[in-house]
Image 1 (cartoon, helix red, strand yellow):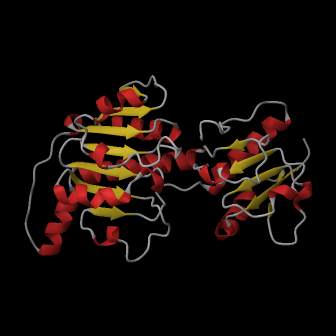
Image 2 (cartoon, helix red, strand yellow):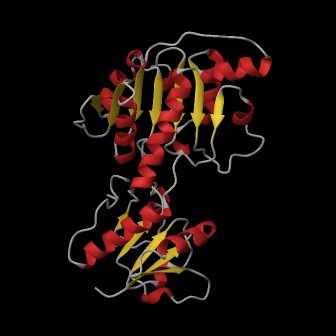
Image 3 (cartoon, one colour):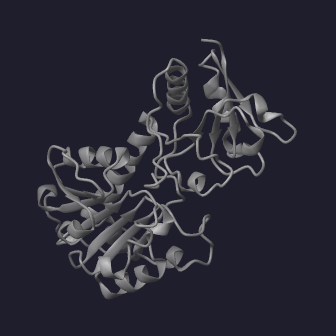
Length: 311
């Protein structure tokens, strides 16, 4: 197979680290998009934010590779032709990073570290009791690649794990719930809820007051899916009422999160700047290269977005 050129666009702040990673793939030319560049010769595009006018100038395009796990911005981009496949980013660094983030935040809420932090700030000696991990009920909304990896990691710490998705999964040690009808049973008595869903019209706003009311009183919320999953106006009232004890949020309706947003000031909301997990340049680019080689050899692309489903 001849050398392949991959156009990299819409993520200029990461140009340097991706160019460095590409140096380890001598048969791949990673070309950074810049104004004035003729993109018509490129057959493959790695894209993050939309670049207006770019895709219509690529008549030979065979596939768009997403820079990250989320694809909703690509699905909303009218310039991506319907016949061009969009490939989700699935790579070991991104998957492990999300599993690590979920474990970190579940342990934070399991041990109620925020109570210890509050006591430390006030100079109070405040030991407290918490149950064993095997008595703690943790639920994961979304059992795709990231959700399954997070579930397996939590299982290794002996938490009780259940998962919910649109279709039922058969995963050892994980109680699987599927579809709208089984969502209440999934939520019942959950003490820690993790959201890793894709953002679709069906999942937008799923984290709302009605859902919070179905969790165990004093439950904790972890949202590392998308900002659109959370009805932001419902969170602080749920915390102030005690229905939720605390929340960890990595994604928001507006990003960066404005400095005057009330989430910053709430003592029981832990904010991270949409970096629960990032695509690893080395393994991510290696995965894109592997897919291109296989596709050019006649094999189908993997992890292709089903546009009708939204992920």
